[in-house]
Amino acid sequence: GFAPPEQLEGHSLVPLLREPAAPWSWPAVTTAGRGNHSVRTERWRYTRYRDDTEELYDEADDPNEWVNLAARPDFLRVKRELARWLPDSDAPGAPALRKSSNPRRAV
Image (tube, rainbow, N blue to C red; front, side):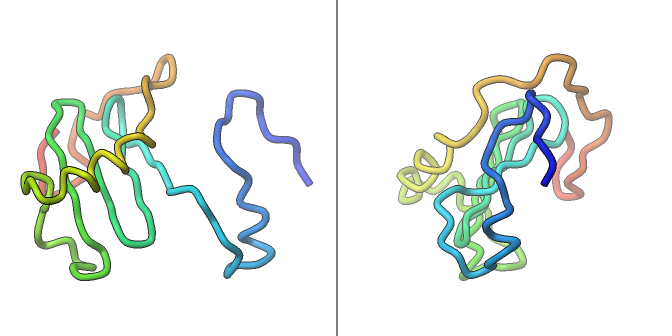
């Protein structure tokens, strides 16, 4: 029942709150500091860091994210499909992280 702030982008989650099994065509996109963006679909999680390093996990086969598939050429198509959802730029004034929010990786 609230009007969203004008600066927000994306799609309303209200349909999913009303019906969790409703079809959904968009991935979740998250950002942790300037230039660190992640895309999550039902099957995949793809992250590109500001230094252009990447992570790709098959959540169906590897829900603990032990095997990073990003460097494997056979997953290039998956990375390209997910990368199209990454933001083109950061919000003005978005802070950079001082420490990595990912314990496996220093930013």
